[in-house]
Image (cartoon, rainbow, N blue to C red; front, side, top):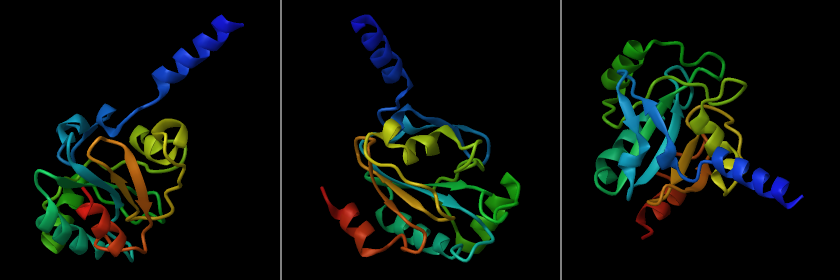
Amino acid sequence: MSLLFITMISMNGFSQKTSIYDFKVKTLDGKDFDFSTLKGKKVMIVNTASKCGFTPQYKDLEELFVQYGGNDFVIIGFPANNFMNQEPGTATEIQKFCTENYGVTFPMMEKISVKGKDMHPLYKWLTSKDQNGVMDSEVKWNFQKYLIDENGKLQDVIYSREKPNSEKVMTWLSAK
């Protein structure tokens, strides 16, 4: 019985992601991106869409990135088409839209699924307490934001209606 228990613990340990640094993704232009390069930085992860009522948050995200981005903070955008087909574009179309309409300079990753059976592993980690060790959540709509601390641990979720520069986010950014 104790061997079975040890085996179950070992198997569980291998399936869990302990931090965001365990993930690798592709950028919007197809290059590899390793989250371990963000060690020591606060990270905001946001699922984006070009045809959503919250799309103007790109402006707020860019302003936040320009003001606070650098050695201590980064925003990572993930286009997703999970909600009413509000991100139908190709990678090239998404890049053009973000640049021309909002001057986006923060890193944008490839289009992924943030919910459902084809949910990207990163979003499984973000939304599952079993994997992130902090909380369960559900991606309810576009422009939902996840806050990750300097050690790669999930800190909080900010739902779509709350702007990227809300008091809650600003307090989190200024906390040491």
